[in-house]
Image (cartoon, rainbow, N blue to C red; front, side, top):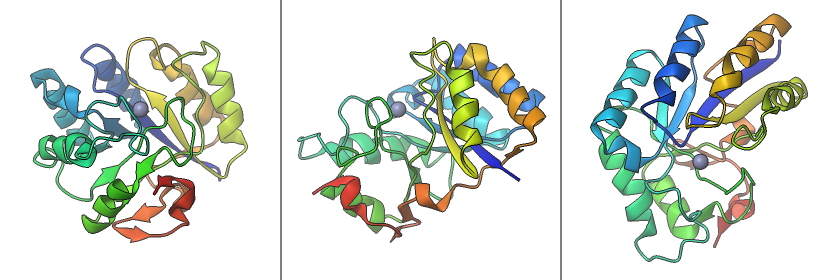
Length: 213
Ligand SMILES: [Zn+2]
């Protein structure tokens, strides 16, 4: 059976995330949320992280500002500013395995994703680094549902990147979820191993393709 793991990045957003959670709950689907520290720092963002956690979703770290991919971020304290600062907000809310999803600008995989310092930090602190294998570009393409169905249909286990922010996946989400279920796909929060090049601090893949070191 084909398996699909959904992930929602760049939130939480006070308008969109509650409605994403509602659509998931109505269909008994669990997902991953990769959140920005700048949003978790607000009371609304914090309570949305708690709600997602309480409803059974996985919540991970997606940087604090989401401005410059870490492999291109020349600040000497970029790891501190982006990963550590977000973790300080998240870890009291979601204890347990630490997950970091780098951001690439348009969903591209490449050496801009991580710096050597970021890689070393993730390994030393037992993180999993969570990538993706399906990016239907919900933030710019109103036809993203068809793209997402085609992308997931071509994979045994898809890890789909969507966005719980305004003008992204919300309008099409119910149709996407219903189409996946009608097709017989299984929803899971397990991750395809090929999308987890660092797993609990263990390096599982050749990182030279994603680390600018
Ligand atoms: Zn992102």
